[in-house]
Length: 258
Image (cartoon, rainbow, N blue to C red; front, side, top):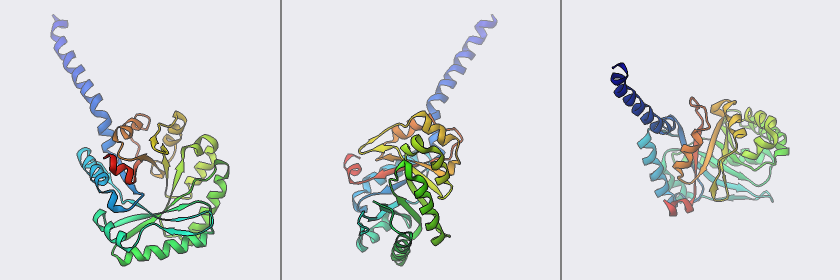
């Protein structure tokens, strides 16, 4: 008789447990903070941004200020500005605060980067847009991470009160984990790119081990376009109490597929 009475209770417990399992992924993701990169004219990104905003509202996550690809310093040390005054005015439709992202094809002098950041930050501020900080997008060779770290340290001396982030490559961890750890101490956050060309790729467990043993607020993971299923899948390898941020790399191609 005891077994017969317990049977419905066991079934109920099993049902509740399975329900919790399927909900677990969204619950964990809902604790995350997300942001997005605007890597083309803001006018081309509306549908992708609306999609992300709707998704985040649905699962109750927080959206940080966007990162705007503002300019590139080429290998010949020429500065190419990607937004004009009209584009800056359009940005107001997507928020009132942003990070400025500078793409670096080489490492110019720190004075050049600091000067351009200060100069163009003032242009945004004149349009009543707050600039939260600077992000550097530079694909350092793994063997030269220490050189990059020392360069950033000199830049920080010129911008002591400014928030500085960088993008990062997963290969840095595989090839030179120690210097990557040291590099993370010089910036507010490393935004690791989990995509290659036009596809998102799950890193190896070694990379996730690195994430799980470093200060969570020092790391974000970059995902190409509005790939929410990929975002959920990477949660399975991240500590449940992690505060790692997810960043969505949005360009005009994402908007076409949204």
